[in-house]
Length: 472
Image 1 (cartoon, rainbow, N blue to C red):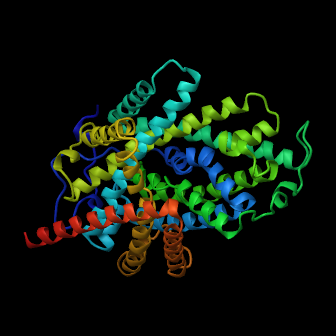
Image 2: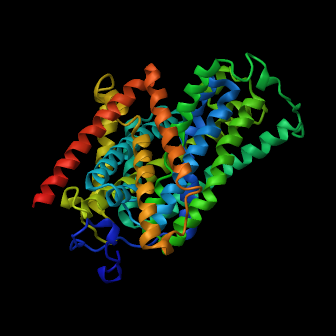
Image 3: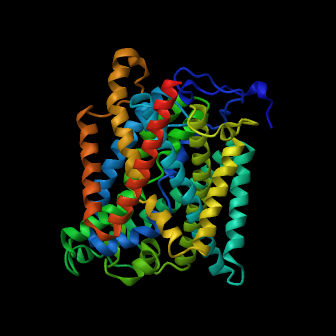
């Protein structure tokens, strides 16, 4: 544990206007550039890509590639906007602090606490998913015991020091990136007919079995919605940047290098899968698209190898979400928008916030066993569209802060949004279109309404708090 004299105070962006940092020491700057670079890459490579993308392929067929191109372009725009603001105003609150600065305290409150609920719930879901994989290898062990073990390990790692989180994420991300890179190489060789024992498939799987759009535009829409939510997680790098050695250059470099790699990994791997394997193959949904493609190539042990990679992806997401949720909570408290207890820092770590976020995640696990038919599904629906709400706050905040930066501090525009303000408005239009598409689909409509209810509730509470503080 470090002495408080070596710790840095809370940044100004973590404190509300007119307030000063609390008596607790600030966060450490223990993350290095290599940590940020891998967090930027690994943050969006999760189980949603390795397994969940199978449902998108089953709905959209080969046109899933178009779905990932469209959603990938939107994510790149959002990441660029967030990178611009985070380089100018580094903060552990990231988009929540930016929303408060650009729109008002109620906006920071709404964006921050809704994202905290999303991350904490995701911690529980990822723990359940990881436990299910382990129990297939060790069938006589209880799932709950594995969930508890994972919670203890990653809660402990995040309690110790931020560099522990960085090291875990560095190696987790390296394994995920390496696995996808190897998959792309093997898939590319197979498509070209250069892999021993395989013949070049040509366009047979892309144009056969119903064609490129086998289920029409409706299937493409379902695939698009699935692909949008698979990209969630890219926000973590801008949260982590505030604890890096050089927040400004760190986030700028991480954002720039991550974009084209994300596009390559997501779009490239989807293209490889639908070129090698018939889109309507049952194995794509049952085993996951990556395992199905590797089995199709006859590579021995592919299924178990990918299960290891998926397990790593889930554990990585648990680690990142405990970290992200604790820092969002810390920032909110520093800005006077939450219980002061959560803002206590010792050893450069907001340990109470880490514990609270982990406990909330474990409560979600308990609910999945205790109330699997009512409370747990309601919780899942409530967080279903939170990421889109966050993206809207990011876009609106960037629209307003960019003008302010150009007037007051143009030297802080280390990262610039492309073709501002045109592409910012294009991104907002894309988000609005996704909301409309969600309202059209029965499976996603309930998520839209549930998330909307939570967002309105938080906005009302945040606005009432803002007015009360203004009067005080």
